[in-house]
Image (cartoon, rainbow over the protein chains, first blue to last red):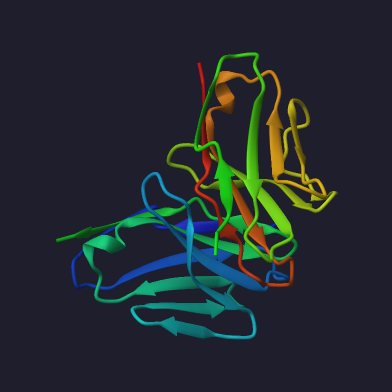
Amino acid sequence: GENVEQHPSTLSVQEGDSAVIKCTYSDSASNYFPWYKQELGKRPQLIIDIRSNVGEKKDQRIAVTLNKTAKHFSLHITETQPEDSAVYFCAATSSKLTFGKGITLSVRP
Amino acid sequence: NAGVMQNPRHLVRRRGQEARLRCSPMKGHSHVYWYRQLPEEGLKFMVYLQKENIIDESGMPKERFSAEFPKEGPSILRIQQVVRGDSAAYFCASSTGQLNQPQHFGDGTRLSIL
C-alpha cells in the first residue's frame, strides 16, 4: 500500500519568513495530493490540493509543487503569520487517502 | 450549508461498555470515511463506506469495531467492550466519491475510556 512520509517533523520560522514542508510517497499510482491544516483540538481543514496532471498550484500565500518522477510534493507558505501555526498533514491517494504523520509549524512573532 | 456533522463531540465510557459514534456527511456527499487520531499522531484510516455498503475496511481492527452507513440516517462507528487503548479522537470525513475529489472532515468525537 501507499506510504507517505513528511519531513521535518517540526519547523519553526520567524513571522514573515517562508516555510517549506516536504512529503514523499511510495505508490506511483497515486494521483491526488491534498494538504490539511489542523489547529489544536480542531478538525483537519483542506487548504490546498494538487492532481498529478499539474506540477504546481498556488492560492494566495500557499503553493504546492509536485514532482511525480521523484515522488515528492511540497507545501510552500510565504509571509508566514502567527495564525499559520498548526499541524500540517500531507496525503496521497491511489485507492484510498494515506496521511503523513504531520508536521508542527510554529511561527514566532 | 452544513458541513460534516459528528456527534457526540465528547464521549466518556467505562471499560467494557459500548461506544457509538455518529457521522452525517456533507450535503451532496454519499461517501463516508472514518479515521482515528491518537495524541500528536497522524490520521489512521479505518473504514470507507457508501450507503449500505462497506467499500474498504482494511484499517478496522478485526474485533470489537464495526461500521455501517444505512440507507437512512447517519453513519455509525461502533466499538464494543471498549478498552483504555480505544481512547482517541475519531474523525469522519465525506466526499462525493468521484475520483480525486477532496474529503471534508467533521469536528471529531473525542472518546475517553475510564
